[in-house]
Image (cartoon, one colour):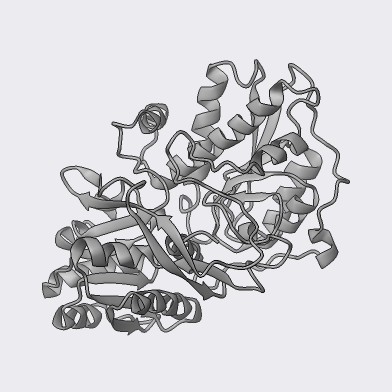
Length: 432
């Protein structure tokens, strides 16, 4: 469990396919157990330290939908090796594209974990993480993965980029339910006086389920909620936009895909709908906004993003500046790239803690580092990440969030400091 914004990121990523993702094979419950049969990767001095990155790079969603974390991690390891690697050892990166399918994901896990015998996986971004039980069974630490599905709240040895409080004993969350907070809605209520929010979805199962999740959170924070459901085959964005304008919504949240969002924004501009914020998630926190929303200049400049990592535009921060310098050759920049960079930094810190030990850099040693009591921040790039394995979900929790607003002249502009945008909010349950 992390926070409601994390839940939003999880479901929103899944909505990109709108239930067209392939289902992968699953292992029996006995394979979820914590065992030690997998051979350890070599820790001998001088040998490269091998890590794996699994990405749904050629998925039905499109060529670049899931590649940001991979690109950020790759940039970190390139810069690290240029500085001499870890204790003089180069980090050798093995990449695998699972094609966005469960079958392909299992094949990638087999190749990297069992054939290449990587020490760890880093920045996993898999549309269908069907191989997660195999990774856990092999006791391979999976560090800083994106929680597109429930795997990071289900299995031991998997460490998502946003942390988890769940037992992770082979059952998702607590008895199959996950929990998230309402801090995003609390933020706009407290900081901008928002009272009415519109939630736009398709008449399709995954979209409708996510919309209900948003509506529940908004109502828990006392909002008046306007729901707009579009026909998936023939969506009437103009009608939804006109109703949003007529109902005087302060905020607009959505449970639709990226292309639909751009069309909704264009329709809102056409009917003259002005809102305090059109709220999106970390996956859409990219430098492509001007291009993607070219037909909606007013709505574009009302785009806000929330997440759990420091704005990639905040180059006044030394850690962000280092990331930007190392990735200046990329055509675009994104928050997912920064989080992939942070995931690779996390592995590096774990490996460095092992480098001076008799066993060296092994799966077991890296895993012990990941299970420390101390929260991890990647030099301030992440809100403190924790793994606590609570027996029961908390009723409330103090949670913080990173907030940015798009402005054409400046890009994504941070709104306050993420370490100060904090609230004690209720934790609401949902089924992933």
